[in-house]
Image (cartoon, rainbow, N blue to C red; front, side):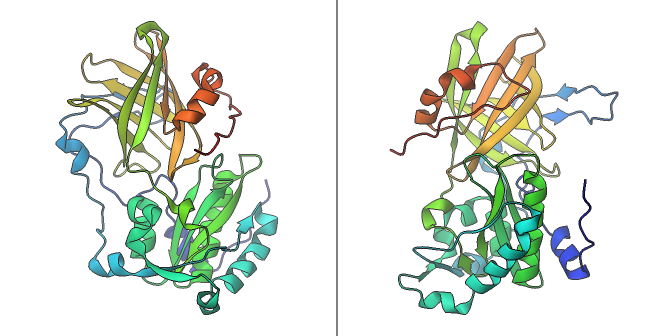
Length: 333
């Protein structure tokens, strides 16, 4: 593996402040959490799980470093045809950084159709942990997403003394994460006060749908769900499965690829692995393949659009914990 050159001190600062897709700046839910055993524990993956808890456990999560009024009222420049600033690998990074420096300047506001918009109206900035971190940046800042976003699940924000340093820090973090995914690059979507993607590409779903495929328990079951950052666990998410009367289960996915789920009514526990496929309305679609204590295999699909699930039902429903699936791109409604 080729070594990257040592970064200057200011850029190392940007790297230290880079927050990856699963880092968060958000607290976890009130109550007991699913806890996956460390990989060092004899090579075994254990799980200790408790019932998901009350409805209040879902809605009381509070961002660490809550955005203040100045953060909420700041404005960003939206352009009708923003430039596509993409690095496909580290060899193309210098050109992308140069393009970014030329494109995100004060001259951009004179582009026909450009307008200043309140940042609180931009879903990804206001709703996601990475977006909140971006809005809280007081100096240089940059937000980078995997490209194409449907199949490249990376979202990195970096804060630094200058926008140039933040851009390079976020780009490098994303390229490192996407190096193992053929065909994935990284696109700069926001820098300083400038949005560098179309506004509809900053959509952010408030909730996500989850499907549990359990052939021994009647096939597929669909739930509304809500996803949260897990405080203190880099790369972790909680997905609460919601029934009519409240939470019916809890899925946790960790940054190292492990997954665990517990069901409230029965106390059943499942452990296994998960894979991320890419963004759907600002959130990552995930597949979790898990086995229960009775040896039963279940698949949990999080965040896929209904049309996409119907178009790819056979592939998404197949037990495939160690391989990737090639999904048909759903037609726009």
